[in-house]
Image: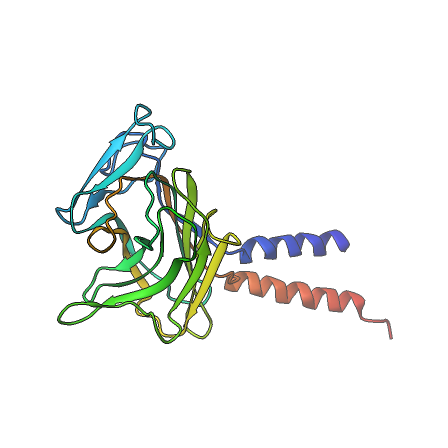
Length: 274
């Protein structure tokens, strides 16, 4: 009886475990910023969004190469964006999540929040969520998590008011390789929880809860460098970029039925004799 109950419990645990999927796992082993043919990776296509920068793949001969072949972006003027293609993903239910992560290195010192790392919905108006940070230099307000949305007629609503942004302390990330990530999870109240994590964030991570999301759907990876405002030209290096999704644990109907049958069986076994 005990063995039977343990078997049922194990089955329920496996059936109700949260599901996860790998959408992007790009290590640039094929030496290309395009969607390559390396079957050991889940590649995507990377490019500079405008004419203000160049994207190349560098190898071990470059002193800043992170792990073999590494993606390198160099700004040449204006605000430069590195963008990666991805299938549209919607956080449809409470507990659904998406996480963007990468190894990152920057070899110059700028003490302003001039790198923005995040996910966006490219359908007009462009909107998304990101965390920005100073490429170099420690600061008590060196990083920020926020939402943003393009406004009709130009400009952006960057969510700096109304509880839609949160600033955090950073140490100096210059030159070292850091693993950085942004996780977005839909809440039961239809808000979103945004968590930024990096070794240069004081305490390791920072979290923002926004109750007025601008989108639940994402179809583009976006990394922006504010060259015009902050003199940030790079280059910056990224490697081992991953994008994963998760969903809340929801037992299958058949599993629920099995649990009910198991409960009824155990009650019947324990019923005292009359």
